[in-house]
Image (tube, rainbow, N blue to C red; front, side, top):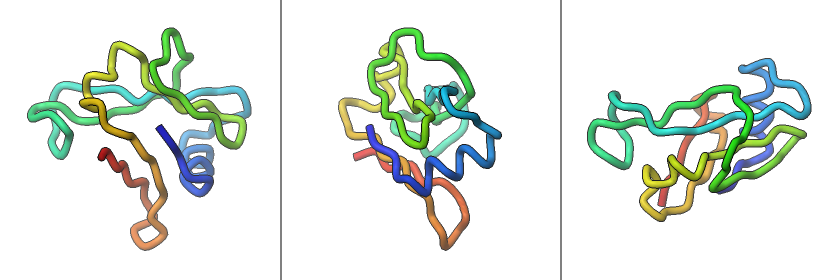
Length: 93
């Protein structure tokens, strides 16, 4: 799991995060564009319980709980910011 510095800053601004807080990425039922049909990636401000993957940048922890790793199908999860579209891009490869 990795996150670019511009992406971390985007999350801080958009979610009004302060140092020491955390963002959880998890699989949710519904939506499209995900790794598994019928599921999509969601996020929330939350505290890690049993992280299976995590990275800290700009004082914020970004993580996936061990119970949600199945969604990524043993692939690398990268988070980056697109200046062109002013939005976050999730790359799972």
